[in-house]
Structure formats: structure tokens, C-alpha cells
Length: 386
Ligand code: SF4
Ligand code: SF4
Image (cartoon, rainbow, N blue to C red; front, top):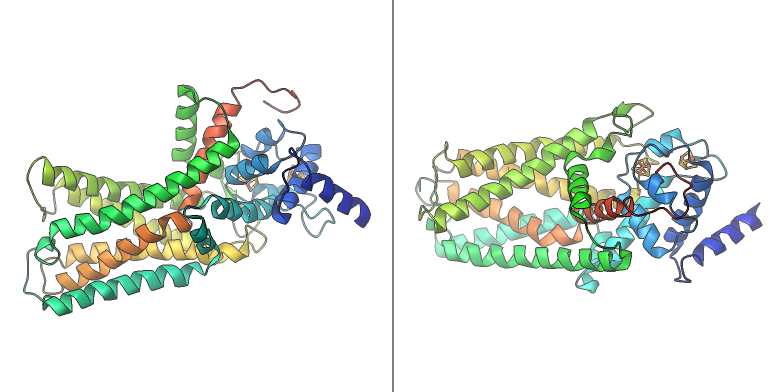
């Protein structure tokens, strides 16, 4: 049996045009060979119909399927070959290990890819507190840490152009780094031309988090065999909270440059309403995700990556908490201090966006788009459900 297993691993490692696979990729390939013979989970998510279009799994296939997996846990809890069975099939875990390898391999600059493997909580919080401290020191040196009430006038503390220059540069770098990583992934996958219908379907599946419903609408598994929709809901709070905060910044920028209305804005104004709703979403969503993360079944996902997951969750939570505190006390003598702390966490979030958990949204979106393109192409095997 052990000899057969070794031969199967060797065959998988050489599959896909002879490009050597890492041990983690070979393990995904081995498990997918078992799944391809079994196919019990075909209706759970997009991974299984995509798998049935292939008889062997090369590097690009494995990267694609690993990023298409939403780590919902359904196939692990349904699997008759899951540990302690000797086949040891644990698809979500094997996929999770490869996912982080994808981020590392495609990271730009390449040397920074190693950050995905560092302790996420320490990295995120150290960056947040470090930057907040730095900004506070700047204010101390300027003698403006404790000014009188400034009726929310942030630009009396940090000049507008300084903020735009600092945050614009860091955000631009994050977008560039993520864009280069995604385009490297896309080139490896070479999915063919993007049709309008495929783009619409992929966007809809991403916005609805379709594959966190377990394929039957009752949700995914978290701590045990029971289904829950809470993982999907907490993700929605987080995702739409993030988008609302981003929208608030965009609207405020339009007010500033187009309408010549600089901040501060009244509580009932559009930027403040969007920011408050987004901040609340980003408070509730990450708190819920952390709660689920702490209770998660030990066989789900890759335990080594939990610090990265929690680091990102902690940073999002710190951003929204400090942002809402700044809104509440913006007309007090503590405003400059609160602003420095908040800006420190925002800066830390931007800096770590390309090298932390946020990357999963980009690569999964690309994998969903490939799936929407691929399913519209003829299936040469004609073996699967589609
Ligand atoms: S995860 Fe298990 S039950 Fe599902 S298709 Fe694979 S081998 Fe079959
Ligand atoms: S964990 Fe969920 S999303 Fe991933 S392959 Fe299994 S059923 Fe699909």
C-alpha cells in the first residue's frame, strides 16, 4: 500500500507537462485523483465541476483549484475518506496550504512574499502601534498633540497635502503589488478571453459569496458537522463595511476637489454617513470572523496560517474602532491623539494589504472569473455534471 501511495505521489508530481510540483501541490493532486474517482461532492462548490474537466493536475490547475476553494469545510465533513481513513482526504486543508504558496510565489516584489509566512498578528499590530507611535511623536515635536477642540478639523493637525501624499503613495504601492501578483497568476492560468457574461457571473458569485452556502443554501461547516450561514454573513459585514469606508473616502475626495468643500463634514453628510455605516460593518464583521476562527474545527484549513488570518482581522477591527472613536471625540482635545492612532492603523492596513489575508480576495476573484470563462467552453472530457 505504501509503495502504491509513493508511486501515485510520484505520478502526480510529474503531471501537467513535467513542471515539478511542490510537496503541497503534489498532495492536492493526489487528493483530487481520489475525488475525481469518487465525485460525491460534485454539487458543493465550483471546485468539483472544475476538477471533473481534468484527468491530471498540473501546477496551474492546482493553483487555480486551490484559489477557487472557499474553505467552507463541507467536503471534509461529508468525506468517507477523511482522516483517520488511510486515504487521508482533507481537501480544504490541502488547498489552504497551496493557496498561501500561490500568494508567496506571485508576490511582488518577490522578496516580500516571505511575509505571508511570518506571524501575522505580531506583524499587523506591531506595524499599527509603531506607526501610531511615530505619528504621535511627530505631533509631540510639533507641540500639537493636545490642541484645544478643533471641531473635527483634521487638517489643522496634519496638512491635507501631507496626508494625500503619504496615504496616496502607500495605497498606490498596495494596488500595484496586488495587481502584479494577480496578473502573474492570470498569465499562468491563461483562461482565454473574458466575455461579458462570464465577468457578470464571476462578479455576482464574488459579491454574494455564493460558495459559502455549502451548495445547498444552509451554509458551511465551522466547528462541527452542523451548517452555519454566519461565516458568510460576517464576511458580508466585513466586505461591504470595507467598501462603504472606501466609498466614504472617495465621496470626501469629490467634495474636496470638485465642490471645494474641505472636511470636517457634518454628521448627517454623505461621507460621514457612509463612513459610519462602513465602520460599524467593519467592527461587527471582523469580530464575528474572529469568533468563528477561534472555534474552527482543527482539521479545517492550515493552522500555520491562523496568525495571518487573525492579524488581518485584528487590523480591520482596530481601524474601525479607532475611526469611530475619532468620529465621536473629533470635537475634543483628544482629537489629535486619536487621529494619529487611527492614521497609524490605516497606514499599517495599507502596508500589509498585499502581504496578508487580503490577497485571498484578489486571487479568489481571479479564480472565479476563470471558472466562469471555463464553464462556457466545451468540455472535452464530458465526464462531469456540467
Ligand atoms: S472530498 Fe471525499 S467524498 Fe468528496 S469527492 Fe473527494 S473523496 Fe469524495
Ligand atoms: S472546502 Fe468547500 S469550497 Fe473548498 S473544495 Fe470543499 S466544498 Fe469546495
